Length: 559
Image (cartoon, rainbow, N blue to C red; front, top):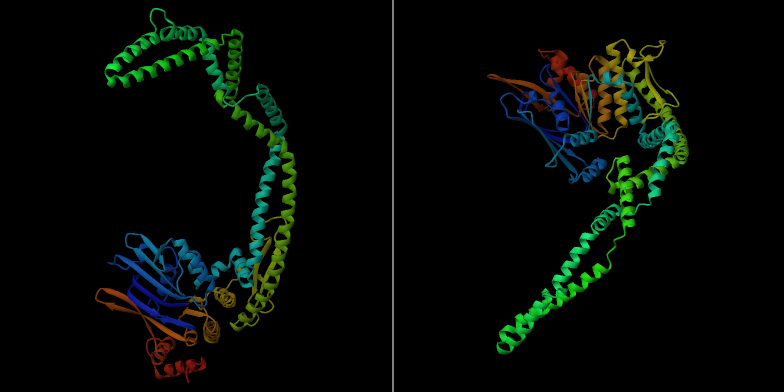
């Protein structure tokens, strides 16, 4: 639950710190005092969109800090641990909005994106605004409210998961089915292309190897003449080959080394070089003996290269890329040849998922029917308490279209109401009276709130348009709700405020050229005065004070 909130430089609040407790807390004050500012600030700290206009005039930034006790929120503790934001049974949330438009959020002193603040807020606080009935007119909201009340999370998760699988398989099936018309033409083209490339019997790196061989064969005469000349110069020239000259130098150094040992190392180098020249001569002889000067082979290589280049141009690739091209086309051909089998497999999968979805949607439909009956009965009872003795509320759950699959099932949910006995049920969207719509909305909210696990409930002037005994009943309902969770109620009705376990008063304080909002917790004496003001207006009399005391006594707050 919310235990503490601190606000600085927000709207017309300069600095405010407020401790909140269990049960129901009423927030009252004169019109225009800023009763909803606390709710707005809490919404912002929990991820609502911010505007620079909320920064108090003259301030650099607005800052809101909210502290929560999580001992009764194990799921939120687990969620925080998953986000690596864990704390020991408490959570501190901070939001800063700069006058320059920049906004920052923190959870337990760590900066986080606004989306995480919003996710956390949805687990900790449920805010019901005075215009909540407007969203209740939307069918998607009606479906969500019904599912939340019935705790259909597991059933909904099954439907959503199967829907995603069915949609993916169905889209693949449709795509393959649509492509079947062109299948024969594609098969004919691919079979020809694959057959043409397959007939070549391409080898890896064949083009590179053929290019090397072509250069060698085309220049075989030049290569032979050059190799022969090199052999003669190195070894076989009678007029003095390099080998002969080096051998003579070696013999001369052999004699001189006997006179000066320092020449021995040079002699050894000469002898080593002589051996290398001899080896080079042997390699040149071997090269010459193995030379291939076959013109027929040269012709074949040229024809093979010509074929490969022609086919490469046909496929618009480089000759070296023909083999990868062949493998790609062969894989396409195999896939297309298997497409009929895949199509049959997908059709079976789609059929199976269709059945699984129908089964999951039917289970959700059956549970929705039970939940709708229970929620209809409870809301009808509250409506009759709220000044509509002949009122009736019914939730219709009908399959909109058995074959129109959606992530939320196939149901069409509609809230039907009648405010008076004997009148026909009509869709909630067609209820004429704004006051009746407000009371019906309040009845739905009060009942729906009992089913939620969210620890803190905020009702922001949801009692607008009611009064008298009905207002007292609303107050009792909110107080009873406060016995199970924390309830904060912004109200202008003394009948509602008198039921609160804790009473906060909002007031304006005008100083010089500045107007500031103050919030203070009221003791019993001040609570009587505030209720008397709400009952009697500007002038407070002993009669209104007596009435206020009686209201507190009825609420069980006076001994």
